[in-house]
Image (cartoon, rainbow, N blue to C red; front, side, top):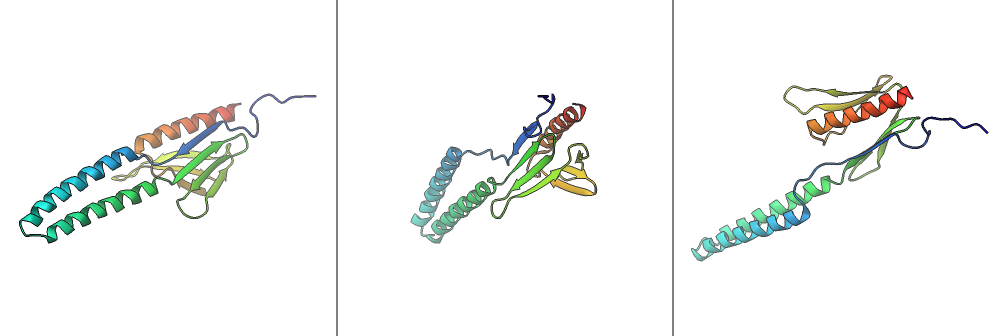
Length: 162
């Protein structure tokens, strides 16, 4: 029986889960909302006592709008992408909040990864091969994109050398 040495065709050489960063934890969100609600109610109640009772309703509406905006932001954080490199393919899978996930596959020996700098805008991460181009990892910061592409290109180089 002969064994082929080198990279296993099925096991990933590189794997990454890309997800949006949210700096405010759920505990921090609760503390912030309680603080905003307390301040809004206190000031609104003061206006109520002075006879400007509609102001209390506007402060309540302000708290509600802030709550809804943050909840929508947290829901968008559930979107993520997975990147997996094996000896057979580089696959990029987008997992949206709603709808079906989409997957793109590239031959690891032909795919080119690059960062496209754009004046006045965030840079773009691109994978291209045989006329097909995919922009992905759009929710990462520019530094995270550069670091990610550097690591993925190193893994691709190692795969191509072996």
